[in-house]
Image 1 (cartoon, rainbow, N blue to C red):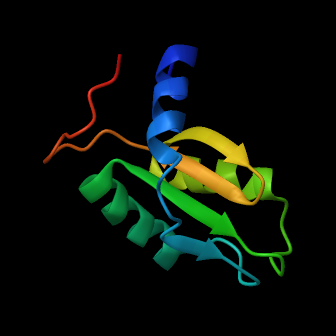
Image 2: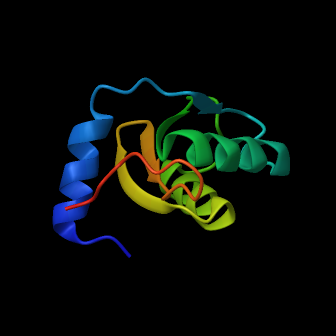
Length: 96
């Protein structure tokens, strides 16, 4: 579980990131979750965009992605979701 200070730090780091995944009409599926796990292992911090044609609520999508990928939900802002998971192989982000 992340503290408020850690979430603020991660939000500031994520500000300049561009979304690398998009959740659309199909919603969250197993293939997407696996790709997000792989991306989190490589980058630790990623942004996911929820498209307008997504039938699920953005907060539900965020919870599903965080739970299924084993990540921490940092922020949902607008249609963007920020996820963090500490890498086991190549740790890059040092939390305060």
